[in-house]
Image (cartoon, rainbow, N blue to C red; front, side, top):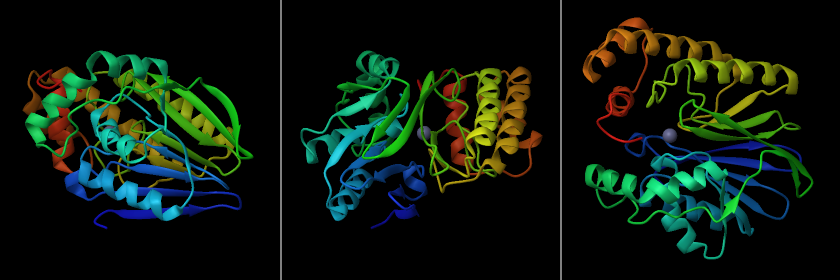
Length: 276
Ligand SMILES: [Zn+2]
């Protein structure tokens, strides 16, 4: 296996976080292993890494209850073409807004990614065939809290919180303290408000771990660095007419962040050269 797996262990469940290497944008697929079933969240950009997620699922020897997509970005949904073929009959669930976005634009966005990144990107979008209604749900005796956050990293993002384990899957709303965030749209203030709410929820629920969209899980201590990032990215956006000027201004306004490829990539979307 080329990617790495980090497993968080609790009394009645495990959370396996699969992370591919840098050339897979470190985009996570997370398997929530319950007593008698698996819930698999997000599906990779490239098929070679979706295959590794499939192998990891097989190794756990439990049925998949459902696939879940957290938001409408192709680095999280492309690989579901492969996964839904390998595990035929498993539903893909998402927020209604995310389902509608994929039905409308998913195919077109994938085509652009295929032209940029090659044929490891899916040919066809898998439009989610099950919907997630925000709220609380108990699955195999474990409490889940599903929440929707709007106008942040993506138009709509689903977070999945396991309140009794102190863990939240927050997708790309949160990044590592020394990583670039994916500011692909100028939603800086709304995103900061989301992080402030997360900070309150974290204290209220007693969250200790965020499973983020890209890279190793982090703790709530990263939230101030994330908010600083968005403030710097906003100031840079107000003073930069072009993508490369914005990249330079973000770099100048913050302590060291990486990888460079992420901020360069975000700038292409922020300045309208590529659709998110
Ligand atoms: Zn992402």
